[in-house]
Length: 293
Image (tube, rainbow, N blue to C red; front, top):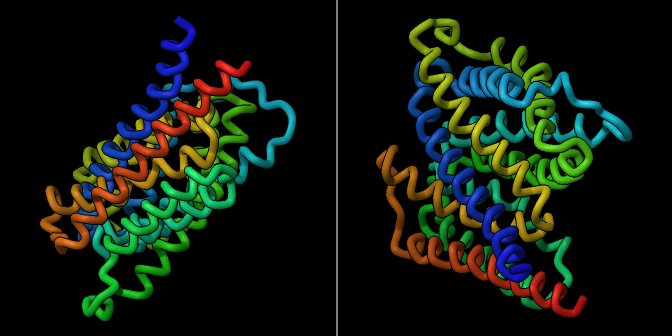
């Protein structure tokens, strides 16, 4: 019974992460289609504002008793907002799968610096190999917009700190942390983004799409990620997120008409294998630790 419960406790957060990634990349594809109407800053403003509103309605963060160090909570909100803003700026000019692969430099850095076992580095190496094949590092590199690529790397930096501060804040304050973090992000970034957005941002016809993006890209995935973060080590969470470039690439193919080279298809298998390996080995490690205890 205890062994079954232990397995369940590992598989549940993994399932939450997979659902979160599917949701967030579907929302990203929808958001990219909205760029011609209100621009990337406008989409980010809608996503943050409406997402924060939905999360606050669900989690009622005003009932939280925020005790102890508030800095991780504030930094979690800052990195969440920065990650969203820079990522949407990047996918204006960079294909979705490529942007997420570049953004993934953040989680992979967390995984590398947090790893202690040799097997961890095998999965990290496999994920890096997949990212290498996913990016057009051959004769197509000249076609990559460097400014967009730098925005994606900046989003990855924010993503790394989002994982670290999110885990600490979530452990201290529970699932409602995501509502407070989104509220902090909205207060700081929405005025800037609304100022940079096109006037069509305030059109009533935009609102339904904005709500859909807020649910798919913010409310649902961040809630699920926060639950997973409190159940998994940061390095395991980071390695599992290596599936995100693969999911983004597939989303780009299905919804945006973007295409992959044969080597980039190989990358998808490397990345998924990395995530599966990380999942299986962390489960085995926990079972072994329990048996020894």
